[in-house]
Length: 389
Ligand SMILES: NC(=O)C1=CN([C@@H]2O[C@H](COP(=O)(O)OP(=O)(O)OC[C@H]3O[C@@H](n4cnc5c(N)ncnc54)[C@H](OP(=O)(O)O)[C@@H]3O)[C@@H](O)[C@H]2O)C=CC1
Ligand SMILES: CC(=O)[C@@H](O)[C@H](O)COP(=O)(O)O
Ligand SMILES: [Mn+2]
Image (cartoon, helix red, strand yellow):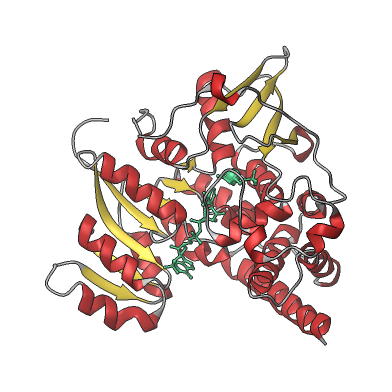
């Protein structure tokens, strides 16, 4: 990477991936300059980071944060804006790379707007691909935008493909830690609290993805994400439990060779890979000590205790909007669980019931995706109210 600094916009800058992205940019201050920082509600963190990193623009999605943002950045010369339309407008500004790290389908419109402009997107926000996979990939094909996978597993697969190519692949091995409840009985899991569910054994992440890891819906979402990102048929994507989260995923080739990417469980590695691509950037992560680690272990997943994995696979096979419904129902269920409105075991149950009851259809536009997403959310909320009654 040489010449002018790369201009970067971060959608979701106040979150876990957003903060790791800023960490990489801080470490390589000579290579990157910020165009825009975009946050949801956390205006204090946005002001702090805007003052430190001097983007041209700071946007808060929550309109209620506008006055605080304006006052907090007064005199800095940084442009400020608020609201969902401002988030989309920020994503449309020309940059070298945009980090898509909003959580959930809330990132749909802005990520699609960036892709529509042909912008290279470092892609963390997996719910966008699950909810609107066909639309995203059609947009990419039409505009020539580049998707650089940030999700650790997909980044690992991308790295293998960059090295070895895609010919003669037999399958992808998508590794999963198994989450905090890997060894728990179904009965113990049924009574799990939000605090227990967000305590991931290896990764420090936002609350929603941490609960997804605990149900293993995260791996289900990642299965769908891998299908779209790598145009890989569902039967050729195998989920493999690997409790140490050191082998981030692997690709099996036709001659029996298995190529994997390994590293410490630290998101700064895949983030740096995406931001620096095609160059590899240094990052101050703990380097792997394989001797200290002692051993790497693998197990088959248990779809009886973790039904979310089966539901996601079924939704991908079913198509016709089922992944959109799955994602929206899961977002509602996880939020309800975190708010102590739904027991842990009911998350997958709720998703299954939404998939059974809400009619799907192929969503061929952003409006169609949003309509399907809204129908699933309404159904999920209705079911939660019924369960509470
Ligand atoms: N954390 C990780 O290690 C990994 C995360 N991912 C994926 O990356 C994405 C982000 O995850 P993570 O960083 O953990 O999540 P966090 O919950 O930590 O952060 C979410 C970010 O999204 C912002 N946000 C939420 N709603 C909106 C909205 N309506 N408009 C604009 N911004 C919004 C939040 O803003 P605010 O806080 O200001 O409200 C915050 O900046 C998810 O899709 C996740 O699955 C993938 C791999 C690893
Ligand atoms: C860091 C990352 O990519 C997460 O998606 C992580 O993989 C979650 O861990 P699980 O393997 O437990 O879902
Ligand atoms: Mn992942």
